[in-house]
Image (cartoon, rainbow, N blue to C red; front, side, top):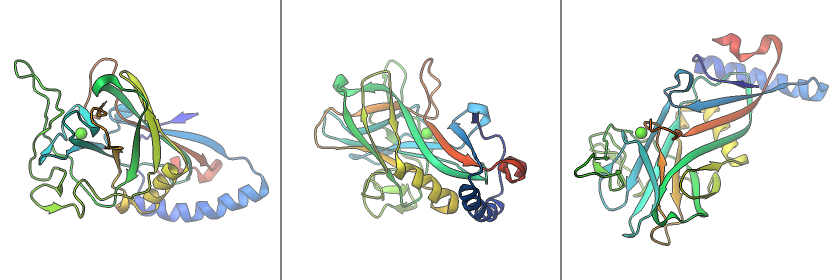
Length: 264
Ligand SMILES: [Ca+2]
């Protein structure tokens, strides 16, 4: 059964209830009382959800594209690297939820040379960053899809800055966990790229326990061969047929009076 976020749950309450939940879950599992599986779907604009932040880092400049309708990842034909950042606000997640599975899907709207089977990895970010309102796409006659970005505004994330004009990453290109949380073989134009696996679910569980550590993920390619860059639709995209970034979280929910939906 699918349910979607419709109200915020107090973080402090959530922590307290989660501790109780852990104890009760152990009891239920030992006593073989069935729990129900639920799925939360987070997608910008879906059922009023507005918690997605996403942008692109450009290796050759201090450009950004936080307000643009596309995200970019991997190496271009000019041997310039792009990395996408994406974060979902989880503050409305049910307090009775024990995360079992997480899946991120992104829609491929263009790829250089239309190469398929390009490996892109998601890495948990270790530092906060800013999504500004810069829009890099330009209409005709100087049309541009935004692949080179546009000059950053204060507070934007760029290749060197987590917050442009205020602070820098410790490592240019973003501070992230070296071990990938998930890997996907990304296909061609008009396909969905899907990341999942236990480490992705562990990231979600970590962020639910420590909301201040939720800086989202960095998406990068292998960056070893040119013309492998992919263009994905961002959370600002409203093109017909395109789909915004979607995070689905499957969790075990306690039945009866312990239901987190009662905490609204
Ligand atoms: Ca954005």
